[in-house]
Length: 343
Image 1: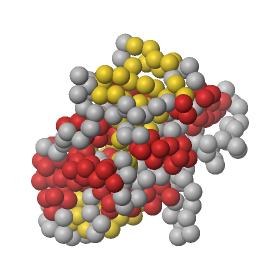
Image 2: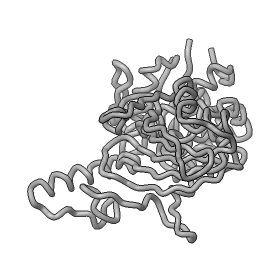
Image 3: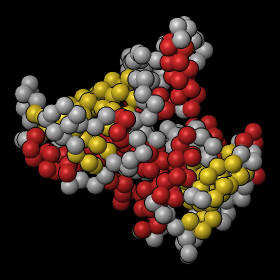
Image 4: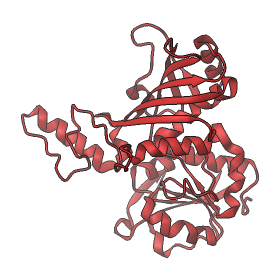
């Protein structure tokens, strides 16, 4: 016997990936209901070898649902997550709405799985930002070994992080350039041309000059890993369809050599080290797509600071950055016996 699962936003990039991962990881599902807005009512989605039709969120009864995987954006989550939780389902939300709520645990299972028990306060668990998730998976074992004091990270984030329309925009601009058409970007998902370009701007600008995406990485890393860590980020959108990359500079309180870090990361949950000092001896976004792991490459010592390391981190943002992490949270709940309606 398994659990009853609802997926809100099942027709989106992340929602469909959630369905794929639930099947791939053989999560014990007795019943799965895909939910979407009224305009997507009846849209078919795949779950394993089954084809399911989406039902309307507004008309669904969650009283017999164990877990609701929410991937419908912040506006929908802000309105519906408390209502769904009040009916008895545990909501695992992929938006940014609940992440910094002190009564809502922000979870990356490889880092702070024990904190899932905090869902009882509001019935909601938050999924971190996609760029934060892979970062803290790589940082956690190193922090345990030598205590991180400061992190400087530059991200190279794929367009899928901005949704299907953003992926279409990159595709259409790229095709247009190949046939000598001027790329259209005004009124699109990005403020400048994304094809054959990089844009140092994700989310809105804040008063201090950082973007909200950069703020998220700082605030979420502190909440998940350690509030004492100092972190600064520059987040950049790049013309890659799927897969976020990060160049990470880390300073530690205690000495940690590159060889020691490499050995630690090889044993760390959720991490795969591909680090050969030769052409191609590292992982790029193309190679990480469809994989569950956070890949770490190019581990080296930083000679400009005491106790410094530099590394390269790559992960499928639709998986570890969103859908996989949500399913792993559900697994944590099941494994700890925290699901009230578990059979």
